[in-house]
Length: 358
Image (tube, rainbow, N blue to C red):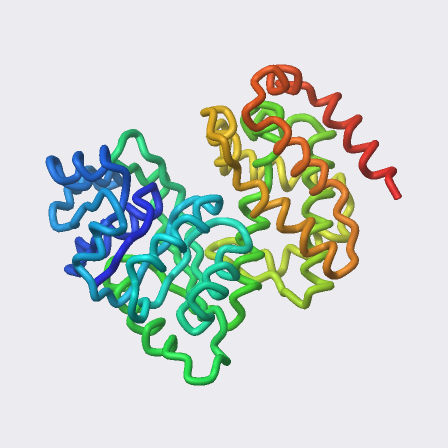
């Protein structure tokens, strides 16, 4: 399989690198510094078995450069959600003929919709990956907990004449051959919204308060806020006929009723043990983007997506709106970031104000 990876970050390098190790032809598109590093030293993967140097990947500093290797069987999109629109424009500019099938392994909700609007739903595959990965430096990735579980789903398998069935099957076999555990899901929105539930926990609050998840979830006010945000999200999903699913080792299909209706005292203990234990002191993505000074945030594709969908189906999402509004206001404003740092009382008071709105 000839694979084009658009976005040479943690996920793009992990999946692209393992596919290349499996004998597939992989072109990785990243920044010039990344392309130069991989060209000189290869792509370096560190996991429980040590270091793997992948020299067969083809690095490219731009999509236009990479497209010289076309045609591709599959394009793997792993850029941040706020870069999806730019990636679509670049791909449309170079792919003057038929585009390959596009697999989005991005976090959040809204990327597949944008891809389907640009290229047609018959070209879009939704994907999820639950493997935690970090990038110490360009061209080097570290797999923190090797559990290569990946979900796939044709975005719209009912599209007349859709060519995605064979492509999904070929992608599944390529990924299995590369060492991933792959599960096919019949309902793409259920898979993506379940991953959204996982991504949003202790993510926005960590960014706003500049605290790691373990410290956040030690305070019952923050835990209650996280529970409220999840309950809003599950209510939006229910009103939208989007069922939660089991994703990897996380049985959110069974946990959803407990989260929506269970006693808070029980949920507090579960969240502290599970979420704080899983994330610990590792800072989540929204925190990394905000406090590294990036001018964009994926909050609009996480909590913000819940707000937008809630408006469409008539479900209030006041806590998710609070988190979205607050984090958005902090982007590019270090003085405000200092005001909110560790200020759980301010967040609790703001939550009370938002939840009292009509």
